[in-house]
Length: 245
Image (cartoon, rainbow, N blue to C red; front, side):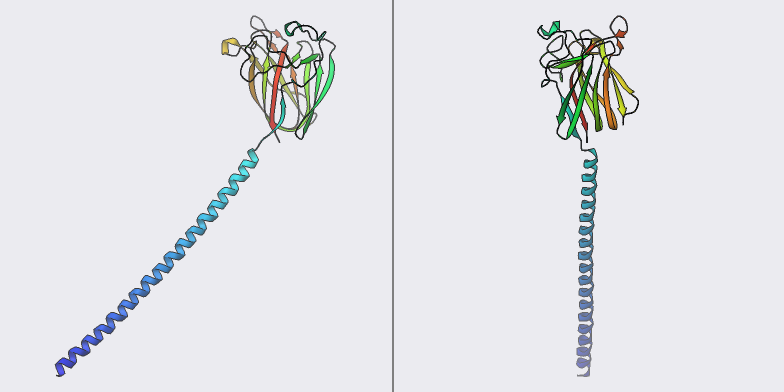
């Protein structure tokens, strides 16, 4: 009997020990699961924070690069002006060397004034040769080769400008100038259409030009060009589209 009692006591002690060990194991599993849940929760919070930061930075970046069309002109709403006579066909029009006038236009919040000096405008004439090149539409300003200019008054900010131009001969174009806050005129560049380069100026050609300036005025003038010999040449501006804020 003492032997049986001793075995019962050992079995009882083992059961208690195993029970405690089992409970301890369950406690560890429970604690581990709680820590895992907390980790997952923290991870989700961090992901949400990172997403919000990324979204905010993206929105801020897009706002910096967002551009408005501040000028969009094809001259088709302008009255014919500045010609010696406006009753002849398009290919017979000649700019009056005494032409000097101004036209105001509004594009959304932007109001600009076009100043024509020995320059003329027609709303319905095309380039010398047709079909016109892509991006070139009927209507243009013709700027004489001798001391002539088209000036666009000050705009708050222009990042880029796209110009469509043409001329009555090949290898011809224009020079673009800019003035910042009423300062001296600075040459932005010279832009020539050439058949040899796939852009015959008689059909028209386009250029996208970087300006990146505040309180900026623009001026178009003749430049030295020509197929056979360099000389100042008359040219035409068909379309002007400027992006800015």
